[in-house]
Image (cartoon, rainbow, N blue to C red):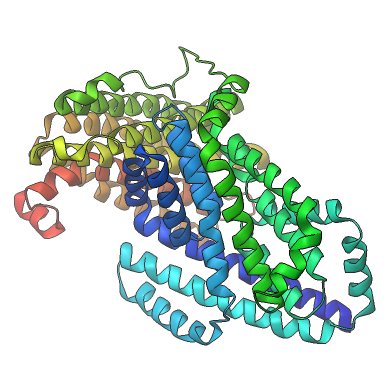
Length: 551
């Protein structure tokens, strides 16, 4: 019974550790995501700058996996050269070691203060950067607290015979130990959490030094798997060059590390205690791999280009049609091309919403699959527009050009966000309807058809506003939010009335229908943010009271 309690506690604290890492990552990415992307795009011009950028961004968001996916997104259409992309991945791998180094000094005493400040910021501020940073602080506090509890939990396990036997078996099978650590890192999406866990085991002498270093090698291998599986999903082998190149450097480094393990123990022991030795080995491994591969990146890139040749599909909706590299010499032309590409997003979203309506109202699974495909294309095309604008020479832009660039980015980002909300929300609801064999009643179907048609109309209006900048039309689109709020409120009243009068039964899906309307309102909010709010903000009409005064 005692062993079961310890096992559950161990699993719970590991889960808390992973959740803390996740909160830090999402908090920083929500607060600075677009800014980080633009900064990375501008810094990809040279190999040393790309290395430093990858290092700094990973240190900020605490995830080389997230940085890898970001770099892969920039490289999808060749908008980021392959050599700087590979250099940025090497920098990202070194960046994770800085986080581990900081955590190796046990800053647990900071946890309560971090969580107190984070919760206050999260509850005090409206949704925005300050609130997202509060989320990151809460996550960092939870991460430190989980580490402390794991250290405490391991203390009585030093003499546990079962654990000792299992770890002894791993010590005798380094390849299996490396594979197990890689699998755990891949599943958790966090090499930081896994390496810190290894540090805790080593601190309590639960694993010998050579096994600890083998597990660290596995963590470094596992963190390179996620960008390969999650990035470059367009079927084009060329889009996998950066993540596959990063995986290749990890594999080569792990093979070299396994060969040198017998000599690593004495060297690491001279640099600190068991826990710090693990952190130092993690740092030394990544610095060595970076030092070995940085001079060889150009021939390595040529090898990747031969092994993974491009395969262009002229009918691929995610393939940019107007992002002409030669247009960069004239900023006005380059911005015009980017604006045309951004408008293509509305065409793709219009077709995606039409297919989504078929999936919801006709329970057509084929339409649902096609809509998801288009939503993926929208997301990829948005990344292409962002990368194209991020690598534009900022010094050559006038003040008006800089403002226009910002409006294109805002429009593209929000249209892509609308596709995300539609995909995760509306298409998810369509799947539940089909899976549970639910059917909307005739009144709900008629209302939902009208809602989807209104979204199509607002999408057309958003595209027109992006071109015309008409203030009156912007105010009209902004007030569409009120229509969707009122629609949801009326549906909620109907559902509540059914409950009060006892006309609700097990088959009633009124609450589920409210979720559909709420997500439809989320899509509409993205359209308003894309086109109406930027125009009104420029003219000082963004606040609701000013909007009403203008009517």
